[in-house]
Image 1 (cartoon, rainbow, N blue to C red):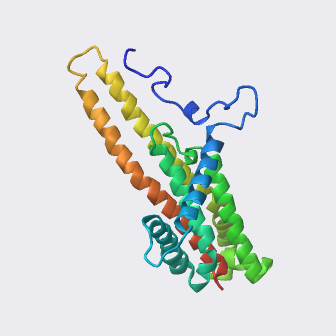
Image 2: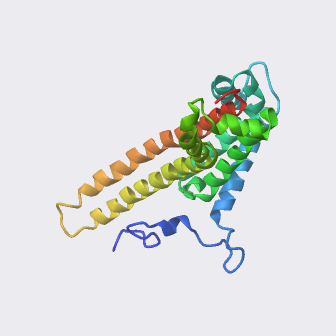
Image 3: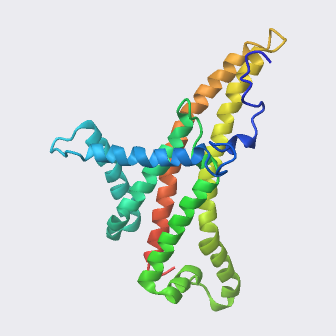
Amino acid sequence: MVGVPTEVPFPPDVGEFYPPPVVDGWAAWLTRFPFLVWLAVAVIILFFLLGYRSPKLVPTRTQWIAESLYGFVRNTIAKDMIGPEGVRFAPYLASLFCFILVTNIFGLIPGIQMSPNAHIALPATLAVLSWLLYDYVGIRKHGFWRYLKISVVPPAPWFMLWLLVPIEVFTTLIMRPFTLALRLFANMFAGHMIVVVFTLGGFVLANADSLFIRPVSVLSWTMAIVMTGLEVLVAVLQAYVFTLLTASYVQGSLAEQH
């Protein structure tokens, strides 16, 4: 069909999220996703190095942005959610927030237009890291058995525990990393697919046989622009939510009771 990009199938399918290796026949895992992850790490490190390269009392723009990002996570997430102890978790939480934000924004950059978080592997890895963190923190503070008791034994009558404890084990110890990963993955996956559908749908409508249908392509492209703007908000919000929930789980691990 004339005008429709031939390299992109329409309607788009999930094969888009499983790109071929960079080098054919070598290292099937080495697709563009690992490169985007490494690029995100490099961008974040370089940005903060430049921001704090020569700190000034009156900060430069880069220094101000870097300090604002870290201060936002430190004060609004770490301290507000965890309390005074949250300051020691601020570096991890700030790194987590910045990394998810940058990898989400990749999905909006022309030429990339794909977030690594739209592939379940990266959100799952981040969720496992957060899961290991809050379990380690809880076990280190309370000991294994007391932490387990605090986590899965609610303050309820003894005759209800046979029902409540399995539910708590399932939701607290097993489902938390799954829900963390799936929330981030589903939002980035769905957002990318919606933008692609509206964009390619515009090409299809513009080349329709009916002259009455062709003007609808403008509406489709307009919706693609609107959804791209919405994706900016979603990218920031999902980074915030993931980091906030991680801080919440750390706070629960440090708590003295369920």
